[in-house]
Length: 459
Ligand code: IFM
Image (cartoon, rainbow, N blue to C red; front, side, top):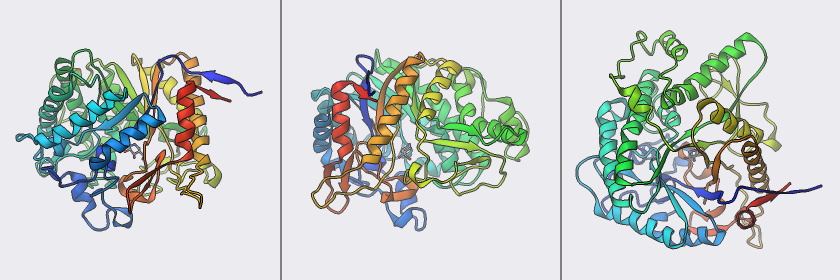
């Protein structure tokens, strides 16, 4: 028999987006060039040659987008600010028009009683800083502090939830190691120093945000998918140790005061990316800076990966030792990611019991399906409803396990620019007609509206 299962009172039902993926207006009103502008303008980097030049044109249609959020009834909205819109050259001159844009946005959200969660860095680094070495160099972490100061002094009285970085592991690996994302490097050593400077900038930023935004809650969002082990063999266990070490423990251990994992350092020495266990980019005190206490951990969850001993990557976007489950079209999203809801419960429970963050949020979770308007204009994206329902239920199981989960932000409010996949993937609750920029609520958005109103799911 079906049962109604309630979420805790005050559970924050939200939606999530990121600046480069929705804003467009890539060179308007004084905005500087970002690494993603440069990357997408380089032929051959993005599927179908797509760029974020106009994206969803959110820069001009933000009022309509907030109206849509209000109609769905979301309690919170996770957005990111574009660093080159605010500091076009990364440091120095502040672009008032950029600050004004985010000020108007935040004021309108508050007016509509939608709580803004602002991510400071969701991958759109100013290109000028890339030319000085990007995240490979320490000065970029210093520049991040200047940017953080500008934006939190401007919005800190109204924004009370800040996320320093989105998925530093994906930024460092896809951008510096696998080359699939901007700036497109293929250098494991570079990705390690990039990861350190991302974490260091987080550690420096937290006390500054606390100063500029009293009573703010601060966290960082990590991409944590469930990592299973292909078989009981020692080789597959070893593959798990290596892949989860490099993608998860390398970030979470220093963030929670354990320093960089020694076994991963040995792995990267063996791969030739470090000479010895002296990490040249780590200075005295850096590790205590990185371990600064935060208020929550953001979790971006999509799928399950399988650790299997394969030294040669199975696909361009997969590192060695990581594979995916057997292809079963019915259970896969169009990203080629398995739908594996129980992994979300496991990930949340593992993170909480292993690292003890005071609170967790699912800061992203969602699925890509391209269901389009039928002849009657209705978008019947039943598979998205199914995905979300199962993942909401998994979140509830985690809460029942004692995990202090404060909210769930669906990725994404609307279809948008999916990085190397361009516009070929559609994650939105809201359909975008990219030729007219018209917005249309999918059935999943209408379904989500009811979930939010009831604060419960029926299973
Ligand atoms: O679109 C991305 C987002 O920018 C970061 N997390 C994963 C999403 C889906 O791939």
